[in-house]
Image (cartoon, rainbow, N blue to C red; front, side, top):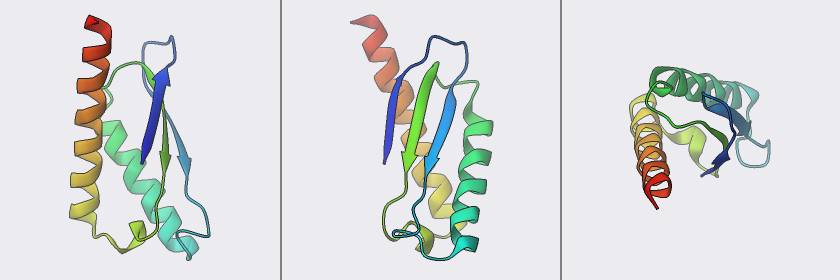
Length: 89
């Protein structure tokens, strides 16, 4: 799940909330953080200037790398589309 709000800068910023309650093992939490940072680094040129807080849900550690990238890519597309819609309104 991702929450976003405008930040007044010229680039997006990312905050991660990956609790031990939802993702048990430290190696899995670190893997999720690493893959999320990589994903946003690849997409940051197309993302609007917002602060993004990504909250990990239960079962997020069970996703394989390809599925996690697809989920994140879809989330970035929705964020970009919603930001464009908000700027035109």
